[in-house]
Image (cartoon, rainbow, N blue to C red; front, side, top):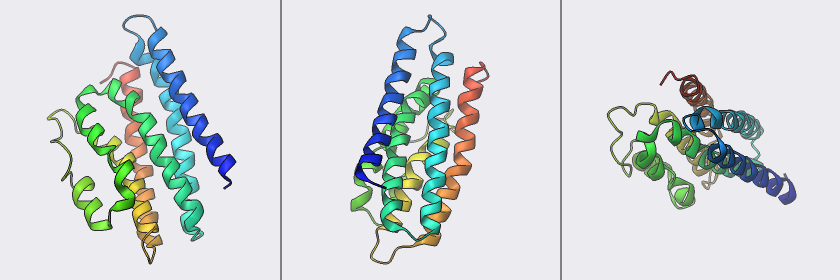
Length: 186
């Protein structure tokens, strides 16, 4: 993937976020959450496509392209988080803390990312009514874990593949949470 292509994709993610914010700000009172779900669902579709691309790159043992896709997936997860938090406000602190992995993954090893983010070592307690927060967290943490595993001196392609396969499983749960929220079925 060229730098220009990567920048175009990043710009697309930013434009999606601007559209999301704009739709939330211009909606009728009491409908902001329902109207803002459509852009979030489109972002989830783009996230899924990128995750599948990353999976293909991992299977091809393409470290360089996998790193680019992994970093883009982290950026996309960060842009999805506000829409998720709008629907699930109890997740705000938990997901804000989870997003720190985006800035620190490249200084971590597999054991520390497991302890600090997968096992919630650096995260605040999950809210009592926040089991749904876990799925969104994993859309952030698993790509970071795959990046850690891919950038080790000896990359672990097999475990990286499992991380992204798990992302795809959690993606379905996040999609369900957002669609239930849109239909009023919290």
